[in-house]
Amino acid sequence: MPSEVSDIKQFIEICRRKDASSARIKKNKKSNQIKFKVRCHRLLYTLVLKDSDKAEKLKQSLPPGENNILKPWDSNAIRTNTMDRAHDQ
Image (cartoon, rainbow, N blue to C red):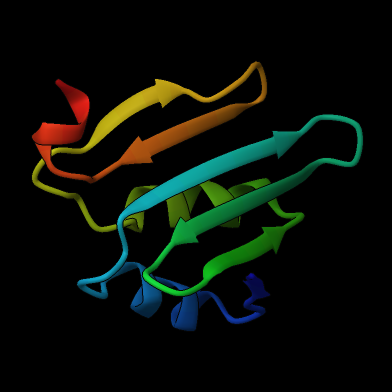
């Protein structure tokens, strides 16, 4: 079940939790919206930004994981996966 977060500081705190397993960044070119999605144990948290400068700063401030891998999710998105290596092999 997704849950939308409206505060950037609260979203960064959610990203730093231990149960945050993956993060996705989806860019919508038509409406100039950028969605940040973080998968946690029970919920998928989303943050929608319309300002590209704030989105770029938030992208840089996401906590680095031990196994951060940037993969193209689809043509308009970037996926950051912080799961353990057993799933990648």
